Length: 92
Image 1 (cartoon, rainbow, N blue to C red):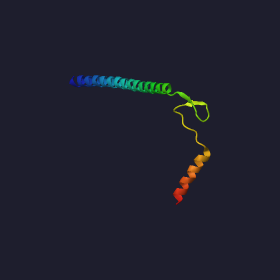
Image 2: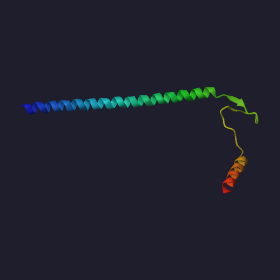
Image 3: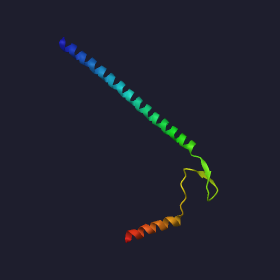
Image 4: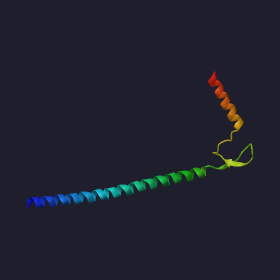
């Protein structure tokens, strides 16, 4: 009789442990999803504030409007000249 009672208790404990493990797994998955959503929202908010602060101004050389945060255009001949200077200095 004691053997039957002990096997029932261990089965109950095992069943309870499995149930707890499954519920913890579900909670962790939900937490990961919520964390990912929070990061996405934060990055979306950051991009919208950046877009609001970036404004357009006329380019003094061309007269066309461009974003203030935009990069300057570089002439290919200037790039080539810089590269050749660097290679000449490395060869010496």
